[in-house]
Length: 412
Image (tube, rainbow, N blue to C red; front, top):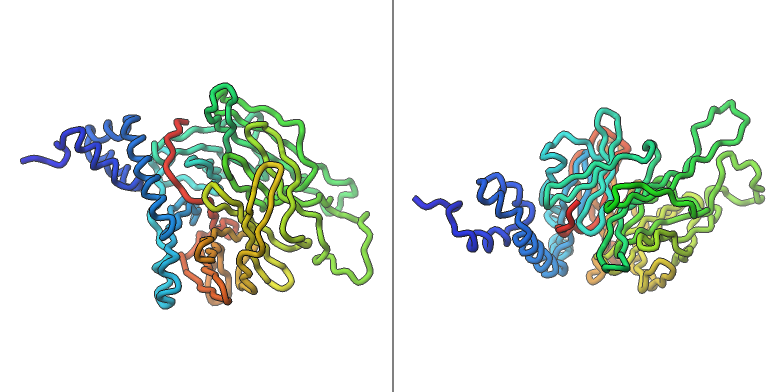
């Protein structure tokens, strides 16, 4: 009796390469023959090429995103076509396509943060309260533990990108680690707080860290997650305000929470290994307002602005974006008031053609426990909530949207 595993190699290669990457784990467990076949470079190139071609076909119908929910990484899909057609069944427009099984094939690793660039994931894991830095290529099941130059810190932030080598035009993967915070201080202390400021980059090629001396004098908030675009990372940055700012003169009649703070975008160019110029935003936020960044594929930068006092929310899209230059379109989507959501945690992406945005967050209330929630918003005040399920017990572990995922053939 002929078995499916007895298919000739050429035919098996052609058939298996057209299966989705989420099926790769099951394929490799089927038999040793297929396990060997799917690890060949020729198969990898063929399957990734097929995935990319299929992804382009789906872009007009479906958006895909990587999210953290309940300490695990999931691949989610959103189908904007079905949103307005059937409001009673809007939940079907957002689906969980699968959980990314990783990190030595186990399912017990707690992932608290994840960063994405060009198909690679940079995961911050928490094993027995010890944080570790792991680079992960889900396609190959490859992981790489990154040891610190000295030590990691609980307030560390990261960015994942790549530089272009002038000699060969090849990509060089690089991690940026930055720590810019103030030490915990006693309420009784009269001494000014001590600032901890560390910026360093890790080169995959040399497996080594290098300290960056030329650091920005602008505050990149611990809650401001950078986004990767064309191998570079962009952040929302503000003028630095020291703790216990007693020296700041209070203006009569001004509400401190509504005070405008000079704010910009800041880019780190992984090719030059330097920060770019301060880039203007299409609005001027105040002290407690929220600014969140996202991308449209590898082409445009999008920014969500949420006003703290009125809960008004709007989204803009860049016309041009470079490390030292940016221009913005007019207001892309005035969402208006959107409640309840916790703007400090909200992440989002947009469908430019259909003028829709999907904002991921947690919903909290007395009658409804903390849950992972998606808000689908559009023109003319359209807004629908989609319940993505109960959240983990960790109230600080917010849903984190990274971006669309396309398999990477990069060996780590």
